[in-house]
Structures are given as C-alpha cells and as structure tokens.
Image (cartoon, helix red, strand yellow):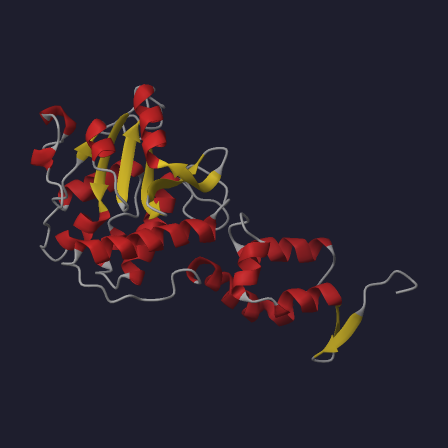
Length: 276
C-alpha cells in the first residue's frame, strides 16, 4: 500500500493483517515445512506473532490442533501388519522411523529434553518407538518401556529377551529398525550406568541403503548418514556399540521372536551380550 501499512481484513468483527490470515490458511504439512526445526509449532508461532504485535487468541484452538498435527501428520496412517511377517513389519517400522525423523528434523538437542522445542537422543528414540507402535498398531505397553534414558532403552530390550549384537556384529547385520546404543567414553553424567551408555540412534532403509536417524549435540534431530560409515567411525574412535532390533521388540510382546540372523551366526562370541 502507498502508506506502507500491511493489508488487513475483518474476521469475526476484528481486524487482522495479511500475514496472520495467510498463516492461518496453511495446511498442517505446510506449517511443518515452514517451521521445520522449531520443535513446538505453537511456541514458535506465538513468539513470532508477539514480535509483530499480532493477537493470537481467536486462533488459539486452531493452533493447538495444528501443533498436534506436526508430530503426527507423517505417521497418522495405521497399518495392520502381521507381526509374524518380519519383512512386512520391518518395512512399516523403517517407514515410520524415517517419517518421524522428517517431522522432527532440525529440532534442537538438549540433554534430558523429551519434546516441547528440544529433544535429546533417548527422547527422539522414545518418540520413534511411540510412532512405530501407533503406525503398526502394536501393544501400547511397548512404547512406555522406552520413555527413559539411553541405558534404560538398552536394558528394556534385554529384559524383553531381545538378542543384542555388539560392535562388528552390528556392521555385519545392518538392517532397518535397529536401536543402537553406545558408550563413547566417560562423560561424568553417565556414571553408574552398567554399560556406560551415553548415546542412542535408530536405523531406517531408503533406496536400498541403511541410514542413521538421531538427535545429537550441535545438529539436533538429523538423518541421512550411512549407518555403515557412522558405525565404523564410532568403532574406530573406541566406542562400544550394542544394538537390538525393533522387529524383535515387537515380536517379544507376542512371543514370536524368530530372528532372520541369530546370535549364533555372529562371527565371534565376544560380539554378543549374554541376556540378563
């Protein structure tokens, strides 16, 4: 406009500028792309609106609905998969992990955070497991076992009777749906943990390759790194890695574990952990 003001229009008897109306018209997926990496949509949008002096109160309920959609719009479709069909189950798990990572991509890392604008490594894994459970229509009790720290997630798999691979055995049995925990050295805050676990990642498949998805310091939620390169780098740096399979976790809840590759096929006894 000639005077430089922002075009406005009436809505329920009140005047709102064009930016407000435009943002209100965006779809959930559009909002997700616009605010990718911001974590909590409502928090981010409210902050922006406050900076430009826009009253958000008439749109509060709509924003809450959109905020909820950001974490679920990629995993809203429930797939009734036969848990005895490991290939089908793995495919659903892989897609779900990739979608969760995409929906949270760039969300900042903060140790101990489980959401609301930031999330740590175990919080991200807990969210991926929760989405897998929802997408594959699995037992909800599974998700609750992973709302803990990285060491607790390793122990949760052990208590379920899930076979655990270690170090080079993981490289030789790479597949989508692995929860890989690691001890990268003493951190101080990891004191007292039986296995010294200080980080955890998950794997998914895309175009025939296995990739890592994680929340890490400096990058936040990220993916797209080849799992074989990531694991090799960690092992070369002296880390100890342990991994369980989400397919086994799902089958453990129905007593159907029948791994494609058993621990007995691992190259050496020291590449496995005895179940506790």
